[in-house]
Amino acid sequence: MLWPFELHRAYHRRNDIHARFGGQQQGGISTPANVPGIFIFTGQGGSDVGYQDDFLPDGTFHYTGQGQVGDMLMSRGNLAIRDHVQNGKDILLFHQTKKGGLVRFEGIFVCGGWEFKDQIDITGQKRKAIVFVLVPQKDFLVEMEDQAVEVVSKISLTDLRERALQAASTPQVSSARAALEDVRVRSKVVREYVLARSGGRCESCEKEAPFFTALGQPYLEAHHIHKLSDGGPDHPASVAALCPNCHRRAHWGADSTELNNFLLDKISKFEV
Image (cartoon, rainbow, N blue to C red):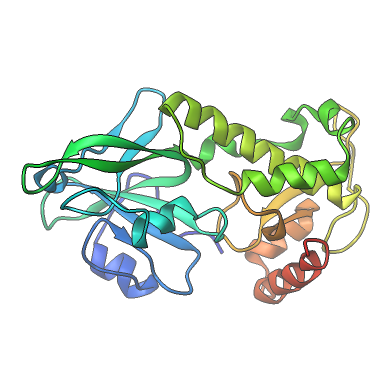
């Protein structure tokens, strides 16, 4: 199953989003229970309470965290955004152009990092606001042959695993440019480790990869078990290297739930 939202299409927040997935129906950050996603809302009314959200030319979106008065704290919705990778959650961004109106789906994003910025709160006082640098997930949907596989061959599996674990944490960054580059590196590190861990065999059916890439590497795809979509960094215990057939089955098969539970149990034995 994939998220049922079409890019740039407008939806009714309460009826189309919360009625199906739950979560808080007010505020900018909604964290529904038992759902692999966090819904964030920007647009109409945000500037009235001190929020300064903005798309930048490089494609990143700068999202002001939760909290209207005083310095913001890394808690509640802010903590959920920061730790979404470790918790296996997608970030889905919606934009409201008219107060009380529909919200437009802007895509799935990865938190590349966060920083403190001086902003004015709802009382007119200067405060430290948490600003997240969100990167479109589509930027990281790359195939295995695009990776620098020669690097993998020079690094031990133990070292690759350590790097992948570090990549699951979202850092505080000094600039948006650093966040953008960091999330690219983190995404690549996780894929490299998972594909190396598989030893060239699908971690579901255990058959050898169906073919070799032009770079001479066995072709397998990284499947994000918890999330409904694939791409971006994730915790290595939540990513499986699958052949294309098993990958489609994990998303669309009648037994997809059972298969994903099997993969979680199997991979947990590697990632103790």
